Length: 269
Image (cartoon, rainbow, N blue to C red; front, side, top):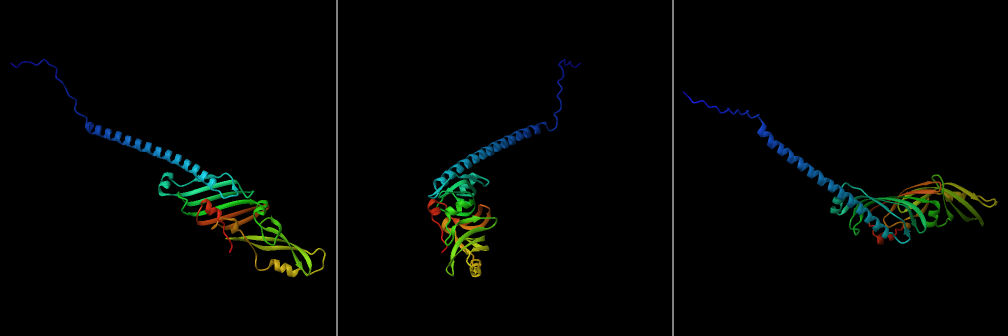
């Protein structure tokens, strides 16, 4: 007769399908999460570094520009650097987009507001800037302080879309005063003043002033050279006149922006 085994029988539960496969997957998932966290952390650090670098670059640019303003020009300049990555721009040696604002600039004692947008600005100022667009808001009194127009007595007056000026000429031995309202047109190195209205006063003398009016209104507008007041290579692209104020737009390509270059003005020759 067989001997009885009184030991309890141990029963093993069958293994759940996929249990052993699930563990490596969990480890892989945790590894990917760790990688993502590291990548996000590195990205955040790069963003912070880029922001800090941009702020430093703006500060240094502002100080460099203010220190390099030509003689007779004073004021504070605000700088904003655009572009996707400041670090990448620095490594490339060129800043994509720079905006400058000087709302209280003083030029030879005359106040004006100026905004500048520069594209393709080299880190090394020994190279030219690819493109510069500038907008100037300047009052009538400031223009008369800075600009002298040959043949015009007194200064210029700004109306709605017109520039007024006065003069005196001799007609048949009689001193004749006249005033002109002219429409301004930007012409690169010059601003052309085309008369649209002429008033003549002969001081009570009975003389025919039709020839004088025809001469003042003639086919050739008054050519006012402005290049002599601007850095060489800068041209006037647009001018708009409102009462008491001129809105002037300038542009330049391949222009140097170091102090020596900015002090070198253009000419209308």
